[in-house]
Amino acid sequence: MAESLVSEILREAGNQVYKFGYESTLQNLTQVEKVFDRHSEIGEKIRAIPDLLIINKRGEPFFIEVKFRWHQDWHENDFKMLKRLDEFWRPIIIFVNCYEKPYFLVTKPPYYDKNKKLKGWPLEKADYLNISPSNMKKYNALVEKYLTPTLNSQKNSRSIKLSN
Image 1 (cartoon, rainbow, N blue to C red):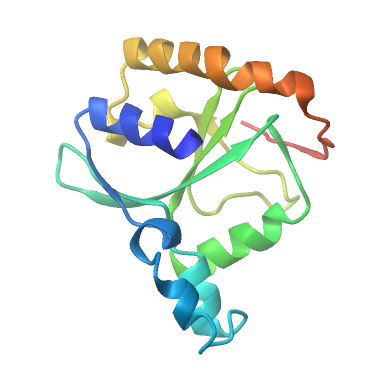
Image 2: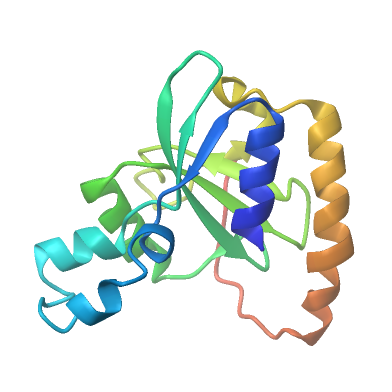
C-alpha cells in the first residue's frame, strides 16, 4: 500500500512514474533464482532494484525505493539494506510511516551520518518532485484513514530514531 500511495502522489504532482522494482519487472525471476546464488553480487543487485523510476517535470530521472515503517524508527537490519541500496543503485528512499507526521520522509545518499543517524526530511520539501501542500494533505488523510488504524494490532519494537 505504501508503494501505491507514493506512486500516486508522485504521479499527481506531474512526475512520470514507472514501476521498476524486483517484484514488478522480474516476476518470473523466481524460476531463475534457482540458477544463481541470491547472495552473489548479481543476486544482491537484483534483490536491491528500486521500486520506481521517476522522471520529474524537468525531465530528470530518479530511482525511488519505498519503505514502510510503523514508526519513524529504524531497525538494525535497515543499515544492511541501506548499504546494499547505496552500493548498487543510490536511489532516493521515501519512507512511509503511520505513527506520526510527517508520514512521508525522503532521504538521499548518504542516508545516514557518521553516528548512524538516518537523515530525512518531509516529502514536500523535495522540490525536484513537485509535491504540493494540498497533495500532502490528501495523502496524509489516506495514511490516517487506512494505515494508522493498523497500529492498534501491531507490536513492533522501536530502535533507532530518524533525525531530520
